[in-house]
Image (tube, rainbow, N blue to C red; front, side, top):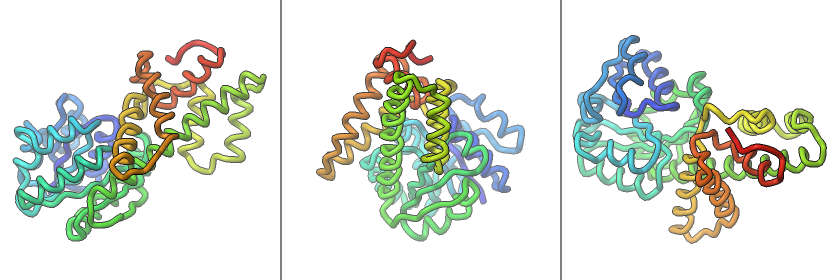
Amino acid sequence: MKVGFVGLGNMGLPMAKSLLGAGHALTVWNRSPARGEPLVKQGARMAASPADAARGADVVFSMLADDVAAEAVSVGAQGIVEGLGKGAVHVSSSTISVALSQRLTDAHASAGQGYVAAPVFGRPEAAESKQLWVVAAGAQVDVERVKPLLESLGRGFTVLGEHASMANVVKLSGNFLIASMMEALAEAFAFTRKSGVEPRQFLEVFQSVFASSPIFANYARAIAEERYAPAGFALRLGLKDVGLVLEAARAAEVPMPLASLVKDQYLGGVAQGHGDLDWSALGALVAERAGLGKPPR
């Protein structure tokens, strides 16, 4: 299959590599072209613009950091909609707002193109090892067409329905659960540590009793070892995602007081200059407020 890929960040690069390794003809674009050089050496073509990456492709993926970037590369000048042919499909794996997902659905429909929202769960190392979990939604014919590509990205996927934004709702809900878990982990480690328990001891108990999920295990280890850089998922992106959760919750008239609390915690971390650390650095911020040590690094 002819595939385009737009956005070669911490997640996009290994995802594009998986598609190339699965034997697809790959064209890539990134704002900083140097990010694509490893893929070019393996046979990918570097595009001059998102439109160029989409031109002639059966399917084009995008993986961008936020709504601003996702909208610009999709419907902006020299964007995906401009280059993608009729009947071809745009798969957006970005974590974006429900409202933007609907706008992109409409833009592609007006151009005679398909649109599938397929955000992923997993950190960069999961993308490298093809252990992502994909949640996908969109018109059935489009989802069926891209299924072989989704299968090459991870260990499995869930199809949620024909409205693309349903996948974004599920992705935002999942990220909210992780963000809330981070707050609970941060407080638990600060409480046990200030009570004289070594972090590694509490980590051992946590891993033995609670950590059947690698998500819990990996973030607990990061907090116990105070290892927050390099970021697998930056704290400022955690703030962005919880903000999107609250935005969607307001639209749906769903009160989420815990989400508001978690958002303020992440906002505090960004305000203190820690936005580029991993979002598990919440552990260090809570510890610092408990008088347990230096700010995160």
